Length: 303
Image (cartoon, rainbow, N blue to C red; front, side, top):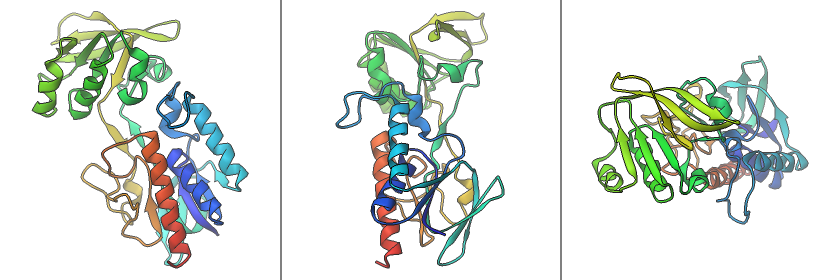
């Protein structure tokens, strides 16, 4: 049995492991795919304090190396449920394993909802992005498209309109569904254009980079829309349902916990993008990891 089991090997999960280890606890990190989470999709990270520039993969590799050097145990398995055994927790995996820990930190992250187009995954970081704060500077003075018409898409577009020569909103519905206040701000800008009833049929790439989209508008003929970047803002998908018996979810499926990262189950904590919050960035994920680990340590120390 270990002191802390961390479910998820993204920035929040690995930071939680680091803080637990630095506080003299044993830690096991369970990761179902690859370490680093969403940040590995960013070819350049330039908004991390104290670091001029790095790739998301670089950051993930360094953090993994750091927790291994501190003594972290890691297992590439998919956690599917947690049993509350009172003074301990048992994590069951898809592969049939059972891991026991005195505390558990859920850092399950989220997945960006994708368009489902051929070649889409390969162009993530090479023309397809999800975060204007993270990647908007790379498209300064260039034309970009934003897929979506809700609040998230409009907020992304507002940020992009301050840097890009043109921002084209591609909405599959007859109108935008985001707040009117956001629409008033966005569509007052001369470099913003809205296309409604749009269906994106394909991606055009040249030398591994996105250069355009194949679209139809209102059921009309297919046309080519040249662009240098596509920001996909059609929603995030939390994967928290398997743990909802022990940790409450909000209406959108996120863990309903505040900055203390505590759940209704003693000894169970949540951290990162899987938690209800207004800002989802690398820095906020790391902050959650630290808060959750320190809360777990206080619990283990009987405080």
